[in-house]
Structure formats: C-alpha cells, structure tokens
Length: 330
Ligand code: UFG
Image (cartoon, rainbow, N blue to C red; front, side, top):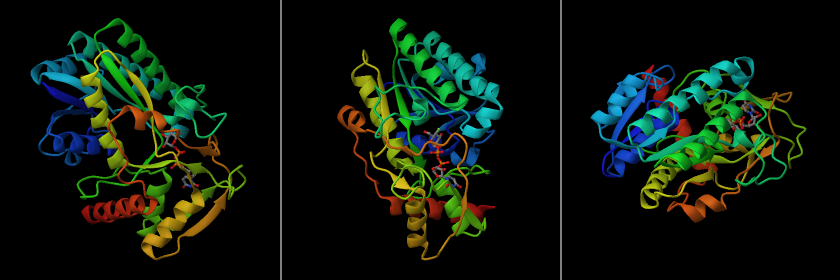
C-alpha cells in the first residue's frame, strides 16, 4: 500500500492481531486506541500508537495526514450484547456516532479504503442457517443495530465519495496468536471459549451452559467459531482487494461455515487439557439465538483468503496458551 493503515482499536483483542498481520505483510501501521479496554503492551512495537478517541476530529485528522494514511481498519467499539440492552446509548455513541465521525475524517482527509468490524448480530435470529449476506438483517439488540447502522452509513458514503469498503460480519471469534504475541486480555469475559479456558486454568470454578432446549442436535447453542488469526488474515486480504478494485465494496460473512455446540466446545477443552470441566446447566441467556453459522461462500470466492486454522482443538489450544501467559503476567 502506498501509505499507512490506521487501525482503530488496535490495542484490543482482534485489532492487536490485525496489527500483527498487517506488519507481517509489510504494511506501515498507526493505531488509535483510547485504552479503555485495550492495552498499550498489546500493540506491536513496529506500529505507532496514538492514545485518543476516534470522535476527536483534530487528533484523528492530524494522524491521517501526518502518517499519510490510505486505509482504515475500524475495530474500536463496544461489544457486549447484554450491556447494549441496558445501556443502548453507549452503543449508539461508541459504535454508531463514533464511526460517523471517523468516516467524516476519512472523507475529509482523502482516505480511500475502509474495513469495518461488523457482526453476525446484524442478522438477529436468522430464518435459515447457514445465514447468507443477502438474508434479512433484523438485529435483536442495540449492539447489532449500532453495527448495522454503520454498515448503512458506509454504503451511502461509498456511493457519494471516492472511498470503498469491506464490512466483515464476524461470527464467534476465539483463539490467540499462535506465536503468543497477543490474545484476549480484557477482564470480564462473556465469550464461551474464553470462559472455558479461564475455568481450565483455575480462574473460575465452573462453566455455565446457557440453555439445553434449543432446536439443535444436543439442545445447546451452536456457533461458528473462527480463529482470530484467520480473521486478521481476512482483513489483510480485504485490504488487498479494496486497493486492487477501488470501485467495488463488499459485505462478507467471516466464519468457517460449520458450527459447534456448547457441549462440543467444552468437550474440546476437556480433550486439550486432559481434564474435566464442571458444567452447570442454566437457563437460556436472553437474546441468544439457537444456531448461528455462516454461509461463507462469498468470502471464499471474493478474497484471496483460505482458512488455515479451521480446527476447534487448535483454537482452544491457542486460547489456553494465551490464558496461561496472561495469568503469568499479572
Ligand atoms: N455460552 C454458554 N456459557 C457461557 C458463555 C456462553 O453456554 O458461559 C453459550 C451461549 O449461550 C452461546 C454460545 O455459548 O450459545 C456462544 O456464546 P458467546 O457469548 O461466546 O458468543 P455469542 O454467540 O453470544 O456472541 C457472538 C459475538 C457477539 C455477536 C454474536 C452474534 O460475541 O458479538 O455472536 O453474532 F453479537
């Protein structure tokens, strides 16, 4: 790329993996992160870290100009679904309003390419599984709505200005950098694999199983778990495509196209650790869909990207190795 890539939220979980993937591919990287949930130590030293908010137009535009930024990868945002229900305005501020400000700065400063962290939560409870990009988007929580609103802004901005975009709708992101350079580090985990490896390392006693009466083979929730390093690689491939075809934009599911149940995930953790996690059956978690699996034909056909880590045990092993390293640190 002729210029740098700005990574917002580059000190966070997925962002810090994307920074590594970009640097390893030879890109110049600038990170803006307010460090509310991210960590300065998670940003590779080869990148420039600027601490600040993406709504801070002065700070963002100075960074875009000073570093000759040509593309933005926008990870910064709030991601906890139940919190979005109790504090919707936080989600519309941090996800929708902040993205609007960032997009305006991008247009004003002539940034040509924009890659956005969207979510399968934009679909709500899909009518059919696997779910495709053209299926109805009917979010069932403010988190999903706040992300869908940004997708809509991107569509309209790309039609009006010389900028193209790729919105990646993430399914369940898990695992950690196989080289142990970064991982999921923010406290207060809600995601199943993170919670399970915390239990496996003694950080918690048991793992709750949220619902056993779904219309799935074993009654527990089925999800499409994708290794964070594969997801980071997909971002780099998306950047290459946006640069090669500047008149085209894309909305793509980022998943492997197969699902595992909660019990299958916990079995994998037991296999990898050679232990037996204590499972406590609980009621359904409000707002949870039964099965959510990606139709991933579009991303496979569109990007020069192939999953390299589509292996649940590998995802669990990498998550576990990071969890151990993280606990050593503190
Ligand atoms: N689960 C448990 N016990 C736990 C945690 C989760 O049984 O302690 C279950 C959930 O009920 C669900 C599955 O494990 O069936 C996965 O739950 P996660 O919390 O790991 O992930 P979600 O599918 O709820 O959420 C993910 C993303 C969200 C996104 C959503 C829909 O993290 O950002 O998918 O796309 F909104």
